[in-house]
Length: 59
Image (cartoon, rainbow, N blue to C red):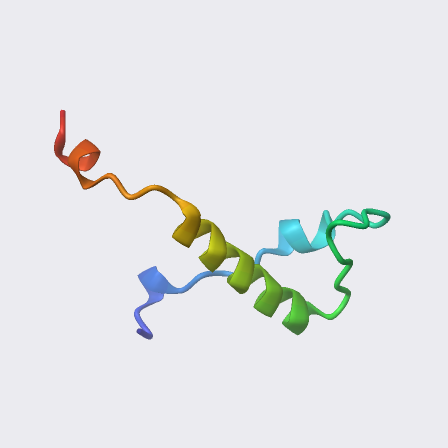
C-alpha cells in the first residue's frame, strides 16, 4: 500500500474552498480532521456509485 501511484494527496483546494456559513457542511479548520472527514466522505461517495462492470469492457 505504500506504492506512490496509490497515494492520495491532501485535497488542499477543497480545504481552502470550504463553505463558511453553510449549515449543511461543517467548517473544519484543523487539516488533519479535514483529511479524515474528506476520506470518509470520499469512501461514502464511492460506495454510493452504481457498479457496472459491463460498461468498462465495451468499446
